[in-house]
Length: 110
Image 1 (tube, rainbow, N blue to C red):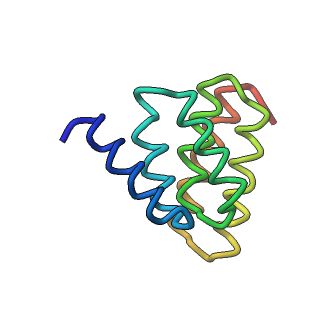
Image 2: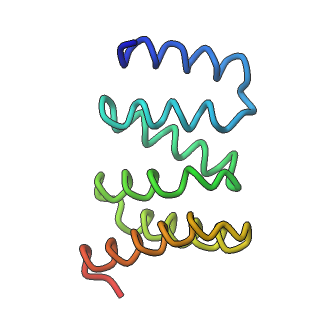
Image 3: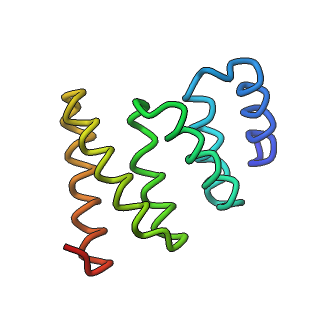
């Protein structure tokens, strides 16, 4: 299955189940390599409409940072860390905290 085939299939899933955050997440991930602007828009939609979908935070924060949205990336990391703590998801918490520390170091932030 090609990237285009996966995108078409995932778009169909988002039409059939627009309330399912996984469908939007999978579509954003699929666009991450081929169309960062579209991935950015999809992650923004996920963060706004499904703020408790924890899987969004790690790739969204990285993409925003890659696109130069450093301040917004920092907020996304911080919100993801808070959510992981609330959900008591230690694996996600550790991954987000480690990535956040690297992000702070790479961007010379406190």
